[in-house]
Image (cartoon, rainbow, N blue to C red; front, side):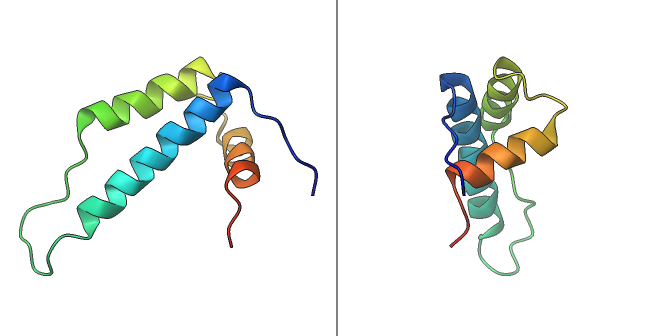
Length: 75
């Protein structure tokens, strides 16, 4: 598999997405039966949106997920 070299903006977008993903997972990993809905801080969502826009990846999910898979492949 060829190795892609991400730009700083692409790397920032991938890192912001991974932080968002980990935050969402942590929110859903609350105690069983917890009646409160999971909450993702607006700042985490905003960071991801801004990073995607700065990298030119807004509305280009296919390209973004290709970068994500290249940078953080599944085991």
